[in-house]
Length: 126
Image (cartoon, rainbow, N blue to C red):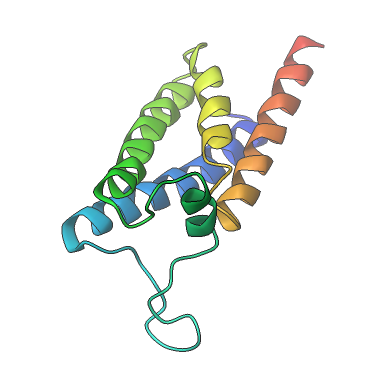
């Protein structure tokens, strides 16, 4: 496995894993991970404003379920990509694009993944 492929897998496992863990927690406890103290105690991250701006309540059952579903689907593509199934590459590009709204960390991880995946595709064609 190349270092580029390994980088893609590590970045995607971190982000997909967070979506999965956050979704499970939000569905089982009714809330996401939030700061326990300080100025931002109990507040969601900046992503909540982005989601709210398009009319979705960030704390709704729909949004909590979305986290879980994204995590599960993404892990499906990660496994297929690790097994070098050709069509999995497209899923590995689509999933980070679909999660660009998860500002700030998710957005940065997603951009990095897409760039590396595109770099890999261009390099493989040469």
